[in-house]
Amino acid sequence: MTRALTESKLDPANAVYNYELPAGEPWLHRVKKGQVLRILDLEGNQAVDTLFYNAHDTAERYSANDTLRAQGNIYLTTGSQLLSNDGNVMLTIVADTCGRHDTLGGACASESNTVRYALEKRFMHSCRDNYLLALAESDTDMTKRDLVSNVNFFMNVPVTPSGGLSFADGISAPGKYVELRAEMDLYVLISNCPQINNPCNAYNPTPAQLIIWNGE
Amino acid sequence: MTDPAVAIRRDGLDPALVVWEEFVPGGGHWSGIMKRGTTLRLTDTKGGANVSALFFNQEEKLERYNMADTLKAQHTAYLTRGFVCYSDMGRVLCSITADTCGWHDTICGVADAKLITQKYGTHRFQEHRNGMFRNGRDGLLVELGKYGLGKRDLVANVNFFSKVSADDAGNLLFQPNNSKAGDYVDLRFEMNTLVVLSTAPHPLDPNPDYAPKRVALTAWRSGTADADDYCRNFRPENQRGFYNTEVLFR
Image (tube, rainbow over all chains, first blue to last red; front, side, top):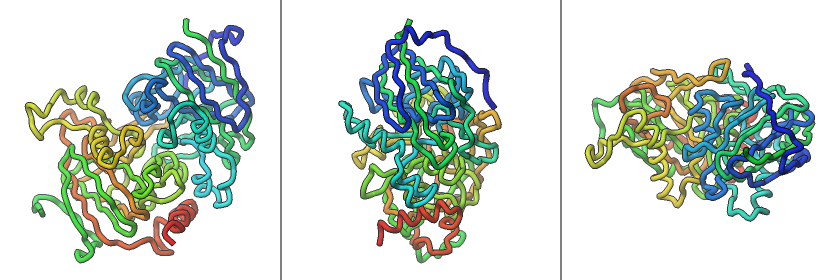
């Protein structure tokens, strides 16, 4: 099931930031309250693993559980309010041409790859490697302790009424995007997912475009 | 200690192996260490209980239960017998070796003070003493604090005895009557584990009254998983998860 798609009227020519994030790389960036962040799936079916933190107190962070429970639905799309572990609205999804996004599948890691695929997959690049390196090199005091369940934009993780969960072929396509309005000053931590063992990136990780506009 | 009004199920338990037993009142919170090779049985004494649980490696508490790794490794959105609880390090903290209930929620998190007040009204200690309304978030934070842990360590939890499914459109549906009086779930610990629990109401519990249920905890020396173990062989992923775990203890 996909909900009605919502397009944006924002013009990249008016953006204050525009960056092509290569496949498999991390990105940690401040986004101010009122700014709008567009994440654009340039080549299609690219999972963009994303976490959000209150820029003034990073112990307040995105909470997948609270977000899903409050909206009563496990998928994210236009109108979804992304809640923090303190119950505050961190961001609102204001446009979405993909239709739904996952927040149960988490970020891939060397260790979970050994379990999911094979012990020797430990040495493949992963989202959690990206997160750890981005935090280690940042001027924040965040560590692994701050890594929690994230949003996987453009990723398709259907859950069945009988409780089955799978990583399915993507429902995204080249040029699909999602736009989020920041409702507080944020750190946004992204890993442009390097996973090649399942269909989340169509077995071919590709770049994502990150565009920011100032609020009106 | 034993309350004859309470249904304590000891199916398959040799009383000589039981190490301790205690009761957590509805709305309460508890924490303790479970060593590798011991099992903790949670028993719903009244029906309709909820036990919100977190698990940490006792020796390295940055290693903790990871909802996403648990779900995706086993292709499931819920837990029952056969499934295991994975840490973020690809190891098995505990295995579900018995379950008379059939479904334990992994998705919905805990209620906080604001949600409990919205649903049930204000019920403070000042007026109600220990009959005050407690919430899962505060209970888990109190127990975490006893080990130097806090908000940053409060991650996605398991809600034992509660069933919430998703329909084809992704809408969450709380299923009442999932757990009956006497239902139990056994958690066999594969690592030395800090267990943190709250028995406050599930955040989606539609009961208009604040009525969390008392839960019995029974710990016994079960031993570790052998080669034919049901949980180990439940999925090929679990065989690798057990390997990752056991190399720690060689």
